[in-house]
Length: 109
Length: 111
Image 1 (cartoon, rainbow over the protein chains, first blue to last red):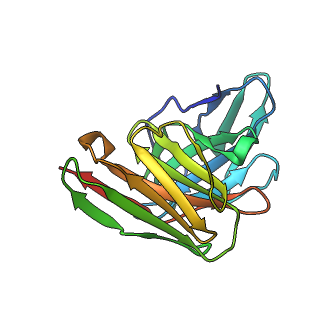
Image 2 (image 1 turned 90 degrees about the vertical axis):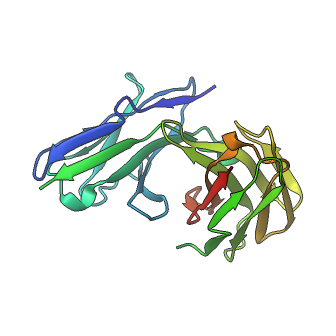
């Protein structure tokens, strides 16, 4: 069965500092990976997916199949980036998403 | 917000009572999902539907049932609520690009 691990429950950085939110997965096939974000009192929304290779709000993520990782990065954190971030994967069957436990990012002024 | 709503948004109920949560979409998408969100666990799939009257179990389906009698509505029922089912419940729909859109969530407290 597939699994997604986000080792940090809380990540606190200062404004302007680089940010890396870690995500590791286990799946023997070729999954599709996503990052979702949940701002305070809002619904989850897609931040980015690896197949699109887009940069959204300055965030990027590279799929590393060798290390089975999909870390989320941003060179200069902003206060408005403070939110809960979830890494997720789908294997295609029913397109069900398997989520990691989430990382709360706090960007201090 | 992708035309997806949930009702009620908040509910407090007593142990042993049945509870039904409703997810409504205006997008006419075939796939709909119910997740629960708990600290440290992220979101976990309860049940999903791939069409009217077509449903299947997810990772944490025990104690839950679902029904989909029409495309726009996906109901989640807690047959006899327990304190362990206190959670935030999210509904999601999947579009043609396989992206999932989430509803605003229902906060359920079982006392």
